[in-house]
Amino acid sequence: MASSDDAERATPPHDARLHEALQSMRFAAGGPSYAEIAARVTRLRASRVGGARSVTVARSTVYDLFRPDRTRVDPALVADVILALGGAEHDAAHWRRHAAVANALRHRPEQAAEAPAPPAAAPETPEPPPHDPTPSRSHTATRRDADEPRTLDPRPPRTLASRVGVMAIIIALCTLANVVGGQLVLWSSLPLFLDMVGTAVASIVLGPWYGVLVAIATQLTGAAYHSSPIGLPFTAVGIVGALLWGYGTRSWGLGRTPLRFFVLTVMVALASTLVATPITLAVYGGYSAHVATVAFTDQLLHLGDALWTAVLSANLVSSLIDKMISGFIALTVGSSLVHRIDSHRRGRGADALLFDPPRLSFRASA
Image (cartoon, rainbow, N blue to C red):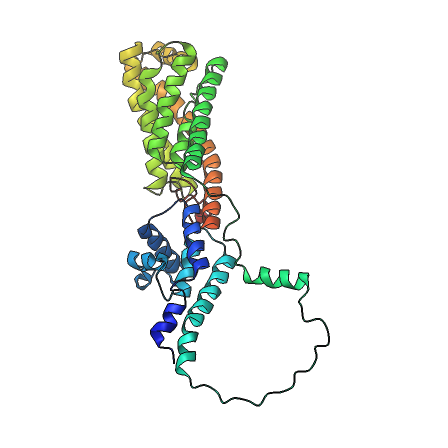
């Protein structure tokens, strides 16, 4: 009678197809660490039970699941890991059943070795088959297809290079929006600036420091376009606006209702004026390249205002109007992008990009 050790050696310690599928899924998801996979599974399970801490999954537990020498696997953990790596619900259910069946099959030889042999039955004369016992080609193909595991994720893996490429495209478009908006104002002599719409979009969607990158790129692009560094001192204004818009919507919760975002735009306008006024006085003698703002400054000077108060007042009025328009355009575009990103991340079960989108919802105020 064969021993239990012989039975276990006769059975593969780990289902090869399941092991290959898990490793393939991990590679397709960008090769996250076992600690990261454990954290994703923990968040997934916490979302099912309302955030209870008892669902925490250890890194070693996930690491053991990926070991090829495991004799048993947890079917529920297999399903959750597949979901955390971007697999669909039907894939997770399929491999959960596959793991459960594999666990049962691994212990069947041991049970058969310990069970007594059944008594020999009297031989019976077999009846002739009513038809050809050889299965048809279509039947064989159907049975083989049923035995084969389904593909986990038919979509091509999103590599690090592709994610960086998406972010580079967003940054480039935001920079272009700033440059085009600033040129339209110069050509039309509007009492606005419109050179921070892209900065606001990048700060809201990507993060405050991405907005800073857009602000710097905008001024450098403008200097190259005009073949003059005359506008570079105002880079500080764009940086301040980027930080306020980014941290305001992502850390301070000022993007969740229209009233909160209105307060945020006023904060950006005031901060931009406080930064721009000293630059306008010290570098440009009180007169910048914005014709409409200069005309307003002249009117206040004729009314008897001092130069610094005239520059401050003219810049504040223009900045308030400008930041209201720019901010709400950015919020409209940014919230649309954020909702698309959230939907894509939930569909993949993994990070779609290298950043976390903010929580933007005006529905809470309804």
